[in-house]
Image (cartoon, rainbow, N blue to C red):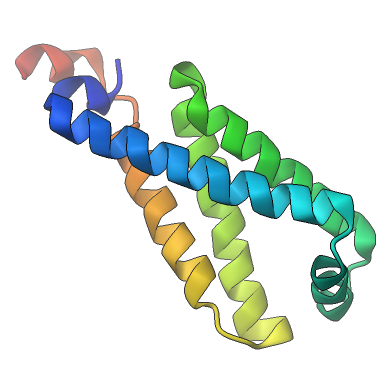
Length: 128
């Protein structure tokens, strides 16, 4: 049982809307990385870990987007994307500069969705 089963229909619709929005954003970003979009190649060149890291990040983002849309794996997808955005924020702050604002927004939305999809113990579910 997840915490989303303890919420109103309106709250569930909001969480689903955010899941879809995040899946679209991360899916698009992941596809851009995997397809070798020039801007993505430049960003990962600046990071300095090599282009293999661009491919790994692209796979993680696309995979996280898919996981986010599957009800049974939404929490895992949110967790994966939250960790990815934490890494993106750190990368902006420490390695490449530029504004981390987009990564912060995506991280906060991912954290919110992950929190709403977190598994709850059966005892807590019965008490509600």
